Length: 311
Image (cartoon, rainbow, N blue to C red):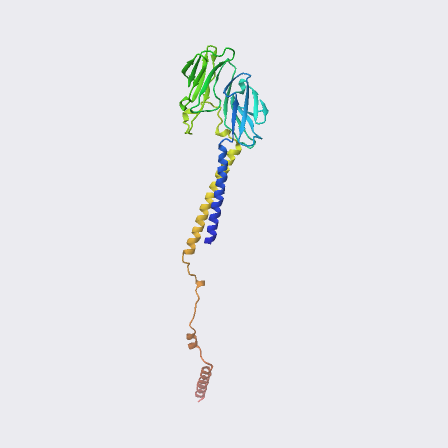
């Protein structure tokens, strides 16, 4: 029994380890296996401007497609309702209704980073990077007018506050830092641009403060993650819980059997052999000779009794 328990425990731990490895593989899906690039690299476009969205995949890009969710909450993929699919890329001529969140998605439900794109029907846009910039990099923000000339004096705002006025219409940050992350817009005499969020990535990954999250409802939420990934996470967690429960039950079962084997067993009537000494029986038994003597004595007594009764 002890050997059987040890084998069962070893098997349970082996199964748990294997499932843990599988769970790690599933969780690795949280790190994007692909990235979405935008050409030109900016988050704002004029009406009817063309943009190229490409899925840069680690490995085989077959099955990857560009997907979007518009400001109206409509989810669709390239080459069906909008754009033209070319391999893992999508070429689209944008309109204001195309404003929304864009990302890459595989047939199995894997997804890339998400990019906010704004299409403006007005005369002024702010050309700012669509993708995150790294601390220490040089970044130039351009306040662009739809018609020529475009190099007009521009005021640049960050989080609603005026930070700089540039006569060339361009504002350069020589070495960006996390403090430069925020919501930017610009104004010129011809109008005002929409706001766009600029993300700054630290050279050494640091926890992102809650206050630095983009104030936009278009960022994909946890509920919009692929269903296959959520299912994989759920199954991995469920299997891990069941494996731990199995190990605990096996330990308790083996411990109980061990305790029962160690305890003295109650003695029952069936376990006791009753032995008798044959000697007393021999003493009580009479020999055949003694029986004949007794018979003769009884006969004499009877004869005498009958004789005396007739006298």
